[in-house]
Image 1 (cartoon, rainbow, N blue to C red):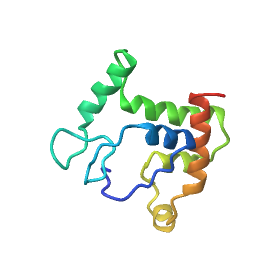
Image 2: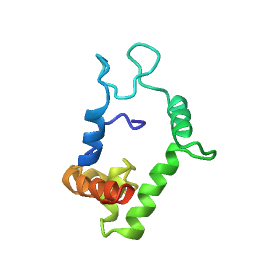
Image 3: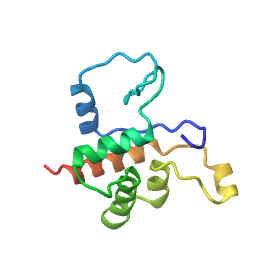
Image 4: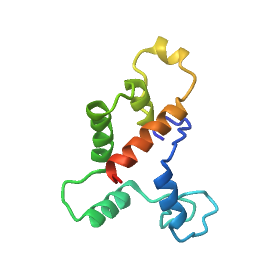
Length: 123
């Protein structure tokens, strides 16, 4: 995280199923996407190239996935703005509000992730 603080991410049931189906590769550092250098995750540029290779389209960015998550929440769900913003780990602009907001809305973010998974793969 750029902010240097922990950001827990609730995964949808489908995401957990997919992760469990992957061949397990030993990594003592806990990275899901293992980099070429020992003890390092996959770099952001390597991840971008991986995504481009999977989709086979130019102009695709990881940020675009985040934008689609944000726009989809606003346009197709009733999830509150603060839940979606927290799911994206966006900073709270108002310092007073930030000082009082101590929770991470984990269960509400889990509901958003389930809705997003259903949107991506209906049925």
